[in-house]
Image 1 (tube, rainbow, N blue to C red):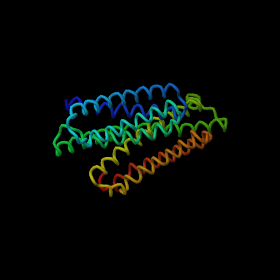
Image 2: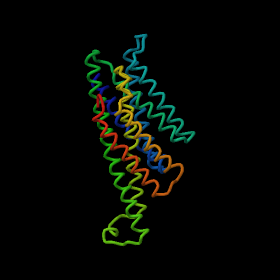
Image 3: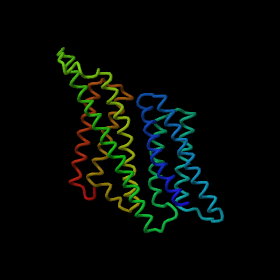
Length: 271
């Protein structure tokens, strides 16, 4: 029974991450298809959460005290329920995304209180699981944002060539500015939510381990600074509708911050 719940719980985390990617895509470009897929995956997450929660309550029906596992799983389930209601009736998609980032963090933290393990093994297993989730998310985020920065540089290069009316064989082989911009945006749509989720997992690990002082570590600070730079790009892109050249420069500035974050590992005390 425990291993079934463990498998379901791990499946929830990865499906949840995929759902948030689609929701973010809808926020960036009003992509109705992405919203439908994201909502479908979120409903599936809600169903899996309900299955685990109900099975836990049924098997512990005669126990008056509710464990921390059921407590935080119930809290996350409630947040998912509320976000589905908001998405259906109020259409505030960015709020839905933020609520589910919090819910995702709660689920990651709840790995520490999974049932069926003694305390020592539970913490060790939870550490390995969270580390795997964090590494998977952050590597995918770095790869996506790196590709996006290449498109941003390509956009600036092609824009300069076209403005100067310099038609070379190499220029003719490049995609149009619109296509380059779309590819760059898609990289952001994938990379930024993954980066945010990886940071949420990292923070929950530090808090659960009782090491909140490491939140002031140089690596952590530069990670959040990098996220802020990309969030600024998103605001400029989705809300203020800045010109493509300005957005491409902002994208490259954010990527420089990402490189600084990677180099800051040499100054970090733990990462």
